[in-house]
Amino acid sequence: MKTILFVLIMLLACAGCARKLAESNRLAIMELVRKESTETVFLPNDYGFLIMWLDGKKPKLYLYNRPANEICMTSDFSVFLAGLEKFPSGAKVDRIRGCGITEMGMGEDNKHRLYEIIKAKKLYFTDIDDGNFSVCSCETSAVRMFTTVNN
Image (cartoon, rainbow, N blue to C red; front, side, top):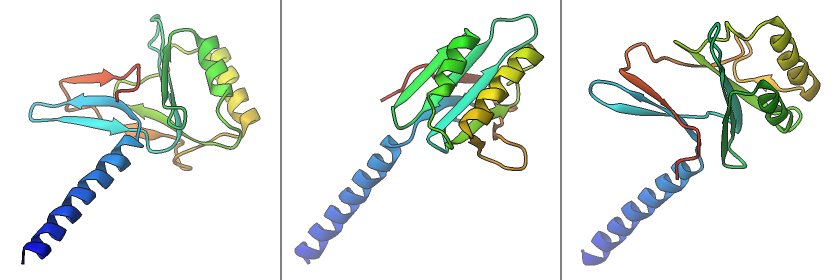
């Protein structure tokens, strides 16, 4: 009986270690703070980007690279594009969109520059239908964007 109990405890401990290992391989990109809880949002694929560019405001541009364990946040569009060009050709990319995430201030010239890189690198988006990974923040009291990897 003691042997069975010992084996059961060891199996449960190993399952916990495996879960922590799987979680450590994910890249947390933001937290959604709600009245009752906080939800961590993880990047579904290895690469992603998020553009928050309100009319007349300085942009917040995020690049996510899970294999390199990197998050880059910049307000310089040229730096953002240079980072995007470092993604491997043909990579599956999460284009993160959602409530309050807008590209209205980006302008047509910058959109053209962005899509030229996407086309040249043959990057493809998570969802074929609408080309994005959507985050719903409608019922949150705060959204905390990660600018560095939280280990």
